[in-house]
Length: 141
Image (cartoon, rainbow, N blue to C red; front, top):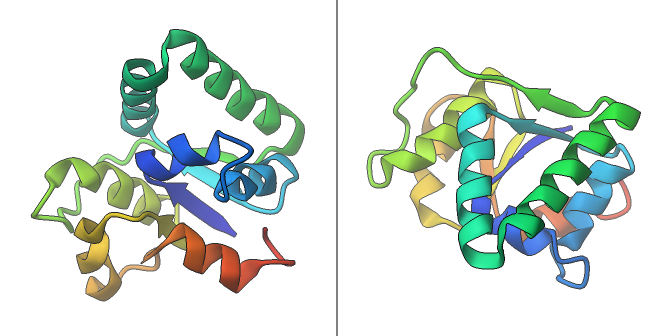
């Protein structure tokens, strides 16, 4: 199963003690694949560096890359087409574009701006982290 993590979910999941930490555990143990693009990685870097410092960003980046070297479950894709699914906060389209191009199953987010993705006719669907964890506990998380 392939997912794309919204920035706020990624930032919370990196704290192993947080209830969303299970998402990165699932990535680490090869139960899910993570779809990212250059834009997404730059946003992760920008926000995490601003909130927690450059060292925390480097640690997250190293973790993502090291897991991929072992599991081959990182899908790096830079979409050349912009689908424009989200009008309310166009920066969020980086996640929908990546998820669509990667044929992801879900965009895991707590952001209501992703609601239009549910009815846009594309495979990836928005889902909250709590819903994803509840639905796939024991299988993917």
